Length: 193
Image (cartoon, rainbow, N blue to C red; front, side, top):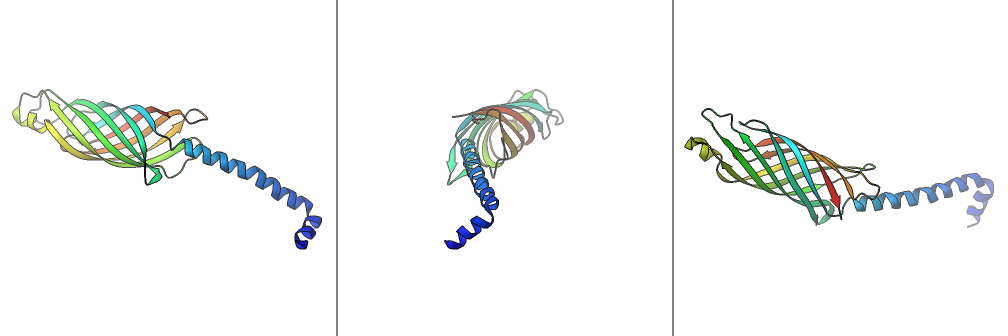
């Protein structure tokens, strides 16, 4: 204890600077942790995007999602979603349009956040309910019925407000499913509870 008093007498500015640093840094870390906790709350959102579909014309894609909680780790979030698109096939002899209604479940990992931006990577499965109005039976069979596929996403959630309740989500998504595989760029909005 005597050594600390001697150091304090010899270097009062050094000790004061260290104490001031501690007093400034600790509350900042607590605020950052609190902001990070806000980013891990359940959320709902909508998105709109452009889908480049394999062997079909590009199309608008609309959808909604819900962050329903975490799995084992707070940063590993469970996301359920629904997406819809309609397009025209570019296959030979194709006529009419097809549609794909997708119900998906993803595990989204948010490794960190920088200020108001939280990048994520996600992987999941989707059920694709396909329908069409093609007159050629071979084309009609391609775009009909149920298909199971997988999803890969890379994106970011961006807070608009200091409390993190509202914001935007931007992602690149690859969906692999029989005859409706696609790559999408999507932009949307979310609300956290």
